[in-house]
Length: 217
Length: 217
Image 1 (cartoon, rainbow over the protein chains, first blue to last red):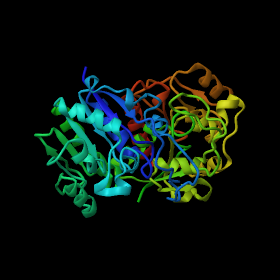
Image 2: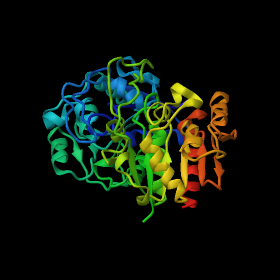
Image 3: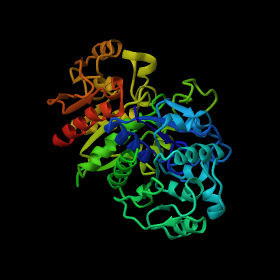
């Protein structure tokens, strides 16, 4: 049976995985009859943001795997225990967790690095010719996860697009309801909440992304 | 413009609002072009559950409104500030938060009481002839929120069904993909994750519930 890995980065748009994007990804996979497994790194979050006020919750610590388990209803495994052989594709929803926990892109921009377990896992899938889907801000990691010259989108945010180009990626502007497909790299990306004004807009691009990823398996 | 209130009880199935059910509710409302507003009480959660291990996280405290803000992407208001006049209907997703934070049903069963702000808000909507939708375990609050004799479902869990009857409600068994509609009370209920084995099954019932609630506005 086809099985897709969904890598989460916490639980909440400002310090973890964007919840709508994560659930929309799982929903579309399930609608297509595709089995999925949620995974997350067993590391502390960069910080905790109070999502009511937008402020940092000083002194509070949360673990990415433990918080991501909320989205996965407890059905989640440590990314460090995951083997690329067990999966046919991988999708990363967005949210600041992709730029704060899965990488330090939010702090360092083009000088960022990615979580070593994420790099190991996604690199192995990509090397095996399996498709990769990156949503929202997660495509900022394209040059580090997929390699130089890979083509992606985060919508049209100039600063992020320039950082992607500076790291050796190719950025292509894209509307919220659309996707960018780099067929050579089997990479699919969509802006989602980088541009979306509603959950319906986010769903349009995410549904297309999931469909394109599954079609390339 | 039609506006539906969605009352959340935290963020996570074991100690707050069930995330999939919450997002599926927002998605269906948005797909139908219905404006929604998330609300939650500004109170501490009963406790915090580590969703990876299922154990209580001793000594940790989280606020229902602050955690629910994660699902709402920050766009949420304190239930105590909400006026029934501003809304055309109300929907409560499930998750243990409905039985632990919005009420003490998880602790006291048929002897439970509901959060006073929730009671004030839902009672006023119901008294104004506006429809109410309750998902998953939230229909256990039917007798206290809607009144004696109101008909609802939580699926087929015998203990919960008996408690609802003991409180003066009428419980009707229901399949996961279906809803129970009490037209006289303008009340719609569905089992969702009380029975669902997948997010697709939960979505089937929730989509029908949202459609039925909106149709009765």
